[in-house]
Amino acid sequence: MLTSACDDRPDHRPAMIARLHGSLSWMSRDAWLITSARGARTFSQSFISIIMALYLEELGFGLVEIGAVLTAGILGISSFAVVVGLLSERVGRRRFLIIFSLLAAGCGLAMYWAETFIPLMIIGFVGSLSGGGSAGESPAQPLEVAILPDTGPAERRTDIFAIYTIVARTGTFLGALAAGLPVLFQDAFGLSVLPSFKMMFLVFAVCQVAGATLYALVSSNVEGASTNQQWQNPLKLPSRRRIFTLTGLYSLDTFTTSMLIQSLVAYWFHTKFGLTLESLALVFSLSHLLTACSLWLAAKIANRIGLLNTMVFTHIPSSLFLLAAAFAPTAALAIVFWQCRAFLGQMDVPTKESYTMAVIKPEERVAMASIHLVGRSAAGAVGPTVTTAMWNVMAAWTPLVGSALMKIGYDLALYAMFRNVRPPEEEERLRKRREAAEAEVSGQVD
Image 1: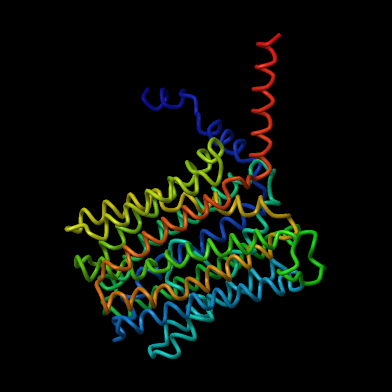
Image 2: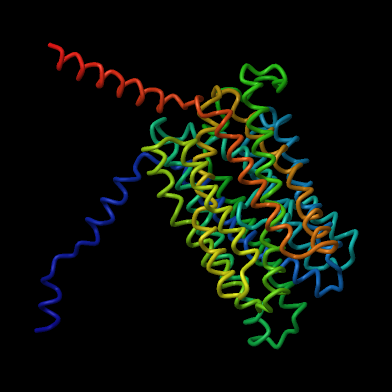
């Protein structure tokens, strides 16, 4: 009787799946493949970023050497971004995406064997192993950002970037959880700490190969209309003034972020409060989960108050929470402030990418994304070194305070300079509101 009654109940799951599929039907196959590939990349980068500083410490390196290895990875991102800007239209976007993934996979395998300083720096540079984790930055990113606006309708551009970033953040959330795997390896296989860390680089390599496979399935449509065009001189682009101004501002933001890359923050929690690897995995997985939850909210807020307003007015409170974390007297309070900062701190990511791609011409997108990444990576390369120097000379809290104050300055400057520069869809909404207001006034007069 019980079985029969259960069988008579209507199954709502197909209808729910159909509604979900219908609500995202505007996402093309290429958009899903690129988004999924970034998810695989951020998953692997997330756990590597948490264990990287601890791994290097286990090898016997000091704080300055750890910062140098992490800096080499950021310089690798910047250098390869230059190559993307110069050669992507000749080599092909899809081909570059595959190359960078396989290159990272090879460097992951090399990290398994290398234990001395110079080889580790070279591997970090070539594999772009920055230790950032949260952003999932890679030389592939400017290509992805340039491709995505053309994979769906213009009015869905911010939503596409929101989904792209949510998937990336989900990857970082799961990757942060996976950072606790070395402890399981030690218990299950009787490994010591160092070999258990090395196993994670093998997992990293597998994830990068998976990403390369997804890129290989992308259609030729991602190459865009300018595939056979000659290289464009950035100094002669029609939007060059806007491009370089935005790049300068974003580079300042990236510098402040790189001062607190995930590897160094994990090291700060470990040294100041004695958090173990298992605790760090939980802390960062929760922060990435909160960030992922906030991203779709950011897209919805942006549709109401505008992209730039969303970028600025969510970013400033996150910096205030970072200031609070710097002076928190206990681990529990520092973690609470860090999680609040995580919820607000990345709402500007999908809105920033959508805004940047909207206020320039479509044929300038690869150049913009590449210049943007070069500037950010060049500025970000300095961050870990500055942090470790401030940490050694002054105190561990000084990089957190410096980063927060400079971020607030960046937000205020961005708003002051670009508050009147609106994307086309926002100009259209503003025009319709004015027309509606004029029509209402005219009707009242009549």
